[in-house]
Image (cartoon, rainbow, N blue to C red; front, side, top):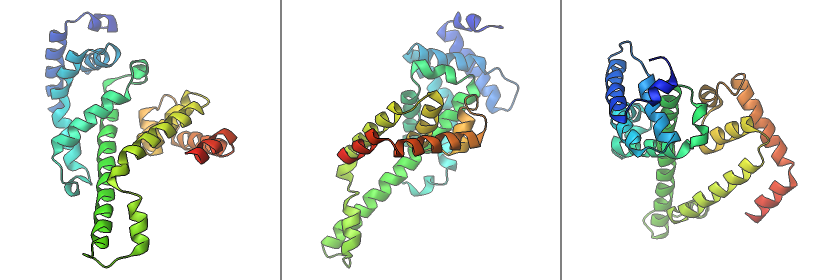
Length: 242
């Protein structure tokens, strides 16, 4: 089987079966053909085929759980590995619109993105947990359970969990504004990777190596964008209104 067209002619059942077999060979560190699983991802994201996604989920569930349990933050988060595994798949599903699937040329690039999604959801959860802890400490201070630190209480109150929804909404508005100020796709990838996915320049380059010359090019693109919008009167007005 030598062409993408031939893969597209396979039935979903045949594709799922072959993906499963090739995945077993991969995890056994044997020679394998990743194109069958890649075709499943293509059908899932490009064609919105829910059955293809349902087939992929059990193929990579164990892999994502292994990333979760080996993560440096995992032991202190207090949640089951399955929770983060499901959030990672959700983040991946939401993060690749059909028109952007072509940016992932092979299975390796898709799995790298899934691993980055796994890291992102765990970092986000750790931040949320820290905010909840700070609010709990501030609340106990005002109830007399701890010595009151007025400055700490004021600072921590700004991180109350009930404000989390508003904060997330503001983040989405900010991201949409930043996206509108990008001059090209290269800036969009750098800004999205840095601000939305919380990735380092090396991770952004690994994900979009075809769009950047090197890691320094990622940092340079991001820094040039930030320098430009700091001088942008429209963006200054946006921040003032926010």
